[in-house]
Length: 451
Image (cartoon, rainbow, N blue to C red; front, side, top):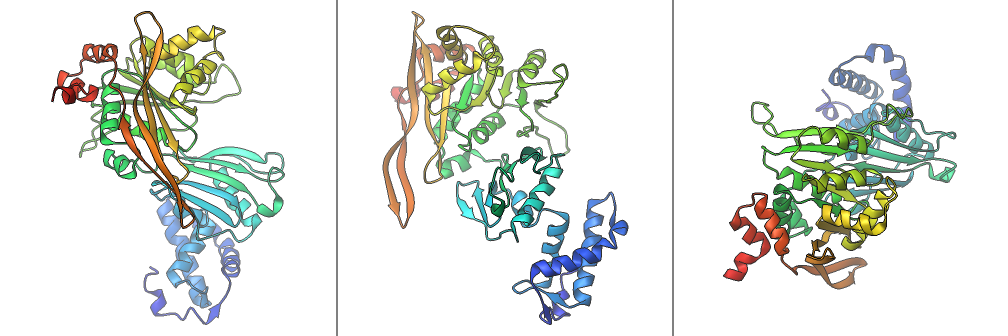
């Protein structure tokens, strides 16, 4: 419809600021609004862009630096979508949008890069208006009575927004928009980005497949969920997988063949918050449901409360469990679990430590480094010795050899190292769980030793 308009109209005859053109078009469309209402999003877009195109061509309006098509697209996005944020919200390469003020927007990409957005809002109020439009999708309101809110644009877009008086009025709004696992990374992607070696990834995939529970730990934004999602994606179609997520669904692990038939065995569940305790369904309650659904592998998206106790109970009763939590090392993860478990039961720390180390023998620590790269910094095993004492062994680690500053940018150099093989007791457990001997020899290093 608009592809060839620039060939027929002189857009330079009446150049104005974008905000002026927007105001004129909005006023014009306000009189046509009733005619534009439709249940078909594609039809609505077609009608609105047609009216926009007619108005700017009739009045030969233009904006410096924009073609006719670009102007129409920007006007539509501003009025019907989320301004310039729209192109980032639906970009598979974007992981996070951080709005520090109306004119300072940082974009985090899947490869770890953090870049300043080329665009900015027109004013502090414009920033507030766009964020309010986003929050409206989840029924949330940002105003003086609720200056801090959390919402979801969709299952895969999480929004946290802070307005006045929590932020300065001249800044407009501060917001963090997290695009949850927007791009499904492959094994080769992790290796290419330097997150881990292929050997490390194959190790994690194999041990979960054959019944060992894993906890992936690290800070927010370190890549825990992305890594866990890949590990889950490697499971055979015959394994029954039950996922439990908090607030919104991050995983999409259902596989279909070319005819649209589901070929694997997955149940995705999400918590439901209610002020009525009888109607509230938290992760702990979903774990109870899960255990009656005959799962082979349970995924608890994040342990941050009393569900930690239920998760370790499930892991100690023969279910393979994979989960995440926030901690700053592999060793600290067990103490973090102990703290979470005490929210449910008043038990001694030593008893709880013994329980969680038995439940999760393998811990994976991931970290976002100063140069914005993500690395699996360490994989450990907690071995239970015959006398009941615990001993933590490092299986793999990322060794940093040099940190340098070149042209104002930090560069971190290092290498992945294989430190220890898994213990004999864990090898025995994997063998009993059905792991083929040649695969066990490969992941334990016994094949290399024989050669």
